[in-house]
Length: 326
Ligand code: SER
Image 1 (cartoon, rainbow, N blue to C red):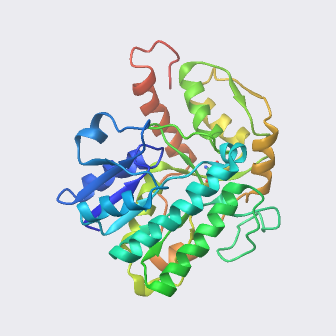
Image 2: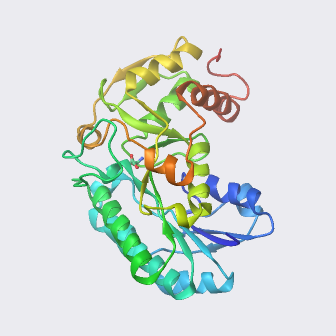
């Protein structure tokens, strides 16, 4: 990885991945691609080049790739699961049409491509406990349909054209920098914001609904390590199960309460998100990622909770206006 284009650099993953890549590869050109209305700001804008790159505009992707002699593309453009259900046509246009554009530009310009897949690529018929790497993928959401299509199309470009495509299936990602928007796992981010603001949390997902989650530093490391992995060891490419923790709302609530004793939560179910969550695995088996590229998470629920609360306290509560955190 020398010159990298991040498409979707101002989103939940992109805003942190761009900065991480700039730290890791200071001599390289790490280009922050964004769309109009989601311009980079602050450190993201000041620490390196930024270009408008709309994933639905293939000639523009090619122009930026050639201008910066890009060798690796991180394709992070997507509508998350719940919002995609309200705009399925747009979800397909971005998730599949956009990926096709990226893969064609990569084929013509010899770029490697990372496109995340998701726990959303699984469905009701998938074994839900310790979901295997290779198993039934029949999602009912358009988000999941675009992710399965993306996995297949990326593998096709690898074996048919030799494009170096690799990816991981991200669990719900938890971070304090840029909020996610419109996902089913977003509650596990929102709950920390409520705790720090001293607000009662209205949980849209029912007690007993387990989903895989991951702290952003682990997710970013996975995105870098899979692209740096020795290709001769990779049996799989698109996409690897990765996992670090699985919990339901009661478990994360109890964990936060250890540090914010006055925190309260009540259930305000969201039928759309609940149906999506029920169709997703409870926990993934990530043995293949561990064996093929030495994947290993560093954060468990307790370590993540301490770090989230400490950082959100600095971000949202510098003058200790809301709650005290133990
Ligand atoms: N976090 C995503 C969502 O909830 C899943 O990959 O849509």
